[in-house]
Amino acid sequence: MEVYRLNRERFAGILSGRGSALKGARWNSVGVEIIYTAENKSLAMAEVAVHLTLATLPSDFVMMTIFIPDHVAMREVSLVELPFNWNAFPYPAVDQVIGDQFVTENSFCILKIPSAVTQGEFNYLINPRHPDFSQISIKEITKFPFDKRIFK
Image (tube, helix red, strand yellow):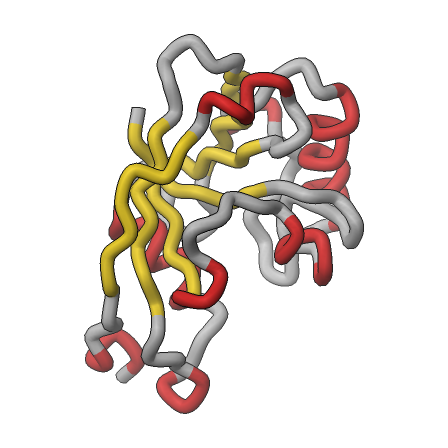
């Protein structure tokens, strides 16, 4: 399976959850490393775009294509498992508990979870501490300039 991650160029080339651990995000608390990826390039772009404005848009984005072998341990979270208002903004603290437990339990390398940005699509969270993580690789890195019309 291939998944996608939109990243600043200086942070591409290495799969690490350190960036998300610095500030925390919807599915992880500060100090918990998770790598956020998306099932397609459009969702990867949407997940980043919701945090930007035209004034804060960097020009150095790249799209990473990440290969995950089919046998890597994955858990899928369905909508019925998620708490009410899980997709609210700002996100509820219970969302971080879900991601933190995923990393702490370390039973799975991948957590397939619904996107809060695009209904019906999925993000794939990668646990860099799981033994299967060593089998995941970056397949391609390409420049990805944003179309500024998105921010009108």
